[in-house]
Length: 442
Figure 1: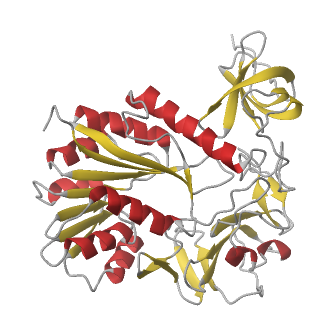
Figure 2 (figure 1 turned 45 degrees about the vertical axis):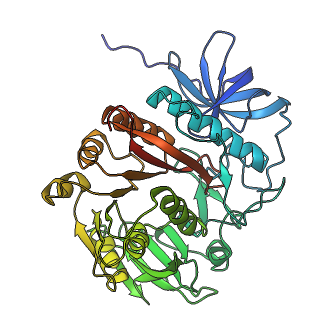
Figure 3 (figure 1 turned 90 degrees about the vertical axis):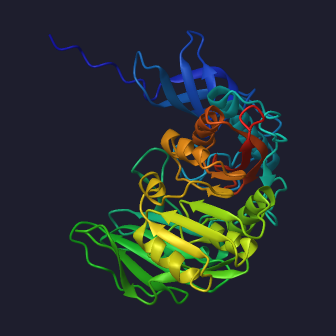
């Protein structure tokens, strides 16, 4: 006999006291009956009315929005963006929190992940427990840093560009995005119609005037003829192959960081915050302390940012090997570093390419994996090469903590850790951890 479907609780409301922040841009609360709620648009210690947005009877937890604040936190501010709030744009998580409070919330999340997944306290991770703002970011109450150099807009059936709601395909119509960098806002994407398009992605390079728009048509859709406020290159996502193809202008943008110009093609990965690339290079190099003649690895090297910085420091007698799985990123990395013959860039997945290189020992490693982390196989292989130091750059504290546990099992421990708020108003945070062989394994 088929079981009856469980009753949806969407729309139900609960009065609750909000508990601690959790990873993902929400806080934890419990109903009087003990039901766990994930509450967005709330802050720890507040008393709120939480309305269910996703969940059914018997669920382990319910997703909710705080639709009424009965007792506000001292850290609460009025969201500066008119498109932020319950049921609206899902791009920001903490518009309702003062900038300093946002960083404290992120620090709590990092500490919780380190303790739960790696068994490390902040002291054991050699971290001071703070999240540092990026240089030049507006950090006063009520101020919003315009940091996002890349924004993907969703397009509705009428051709109007907007931003997606939280965990939804629904689109919030917007007239502007407050966290978009000036170079993105100046394109005026929201002011124009985009018939037959599914998404429009806008990119404004740092350190150059390069602007790029990437169009994804709906099935069978034709590209619109649209005049933008600024000169741009235009790319499109192919309907059949999913590849990115040039329509107009250069197929790349030029980014400036670490005293070099970087070609980034076909919408490839580059740090979204304009200060991020320089800040991370500085943190990584300070931690690694490269010496002339060192042999270094740059894993998940992208277009070569860290490989270039390493090559400058290890000198002519040193060597740098970069490994990257993205074919276009490898082409860009080789182009960007063609003047440095001590750099070699290999194409393929790190876990497949690294064992094939025949390398048996290295001095330094930069590890900048995707959000899922490096994983046990890669961590174990790296440890077997006995590097003097490893710099791990992480955009997800949970994946970082899992990998730090693997490193501990392989004989490496944190010697310095820093965290950076490179994604203000969101729950995302960037960490740099420098590891060395632990005393018991040295």
